Amino acid sequence: MAYAIDDPSRRRFVNWFLGTSAGAFLLAVLYPVSRYLVPPPSGESAAGTVTLAIKPEDVKPNTGQIFKFGSRPGILVRTAAGELRAFSAVCTHLNCTVQYRPDFGQIWCACHNGHFDLNGKNVEGPPPRPLEAFAVNARGNQIVVSKGA
Amino acid sequence: MTAPLVIIIVTVVGVLGLWTAPAYAQPAGADNCATCHLAIGAARLEKPVKDYAHDVHKAKGFGCVACHGGNEKEAGMEAMDPGKGYIGKPGRKQVVQVCARCHSDATFMKRYNPSLLVDQATEYATSVHGRKLREEDDPKVATCVSCHPAHSIRPPSDPTSSVYPLRVAETCGACHGDAKYMEGRRLPTDQLAKYKESVHGKAMIVKGDLSAPTCNDCHGNHGAAPPGVSWVGNVCGQCHTVMADLFGKSVHAKAFVDMGTPGCATCHDNHAIRETGDRMLGLGSDAVCTTCHGATDKGGQTAVEMRALIDGLAGRHRAARELLDRAEHAGMEVTQAKFDLNSARDSLVKARAAVHAFTVDAVKAETTAGVAVADKAHARGVRALGELVFRRKGLGISLVIILAVIAGLLLKIRQVDRRGRAIERGSAR
Image 1 (cartoon, rainbow over the protein chains, first blue to last red):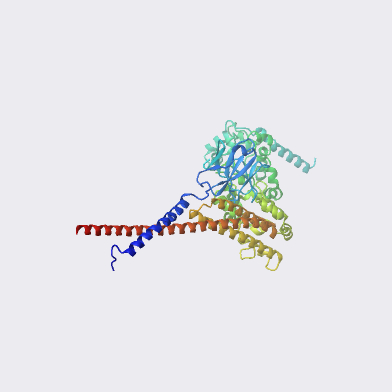
Image 2 (image 1 turned 120 degrees about the vertical axis):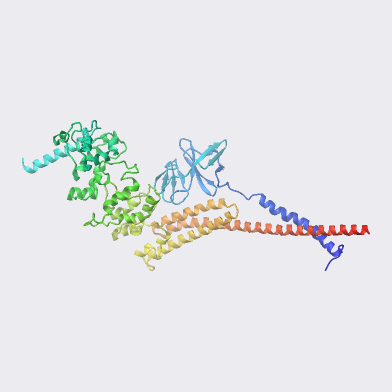
């Protein structure tokens, strides 16, 4: 069955269809596109480097802080002598998160009482390997920690 | 003077003579010992000289006379004059004295290795080896040279040394794994085989983890002895401090001593220590608690409750992690949730350690916090996946609309084209 080219009902349908879909088109296209283009609240990449939301002067000597390196914890330590050092905070024994103990002057794992010195070396308890060391750079008000120290 | 008194005086003088010998234990000059031993052409005489080329004592400048006495500057048999202190090949008991002349002299040893301990002879005297040598003149027990082969002694840090951590088990096993050599003794001879299959042995031998314990870490080295029943926990507690502390305060510490069972080794074995796991807890087929406990006694019920708490946290942690992994692989940003979930894993590890307190409360204290964290992470994973579904639906709907608009446009274009052609045909008529 063939419609006449100037069939008014068909023309009206097509015009209505195009007219009403213009708004829907814009809305339906732009909204998801905007949601894809605007990234969700993002953590730092798990790749090589992380900039910490800590000012160097806020890290006092003989203290340590846990920071987020991708989805893994890192630990930033300022030694009593004032040097900043950073390591993976994942204990090499059973992957617990380690912490800094000012009373020991060492990095310590609460799970099985593992001790690491301030070079990350396992010095007591069951951890079999040193902590992975990171490079730390203080750039103005920022602390940048990178893998591959 | 009676005969026994003469013997005592002679012995004392002899021993003092040996113990004061560091004075001549000096670096060597001309070495006629080596010259003759190599010139004679007998393999038996050549071997010590050739072996000694790589000995740590040779490296420090000591010659044959440091241990054997005599005078290496003399050519010929005069070098081996007993009157000049030559003792030849030391006897089994004499070996310990010869080594101890220097190694028990702190002042002397400081000149060569200030950090080296000087208690080896004292320790050896307390060892089973030392006691059997002293009291029974046992011809088979180890002396210094059994573990540190004479003429090829290397420091423990040297990978070719017989006492390098990777080689200690084989060194001890040379005697203790030899059923024929150990015949007539009460000791088993399967320790080496069991150690190789143990979690410690695999860490040391397979992974090359030099911090893993080997024979001397539990038995002592120069003072080697089996740990007593009441102090096994102290031995294991050198590394496993948290568990040892909890165990020491638990009901089992006393119960095991009363039963005469060896503390940690009661559940974990001694040389064949397997990798631990939740399977060991409770009343299942692999559970060690079943050795003493059953479903009807309080201990058995405690074990079952502790296992349920740990399984509950482990299951929640696993579910949350899998959910977050799925969301992450689908492109959602969940690193904060995964970061936070780490503390649930910490709680799980601590709960497993807390089992050694053998109370439900100790385990629950760790699992409660962990479960809360795991549940929160799980909820964030559910939200992330919900967001993913929403975005996919949005994309699908927008694609349908886009395709519909494209189809509409094509229809419109076709309509316009046809109308145009119809107008052109009308004009042509």
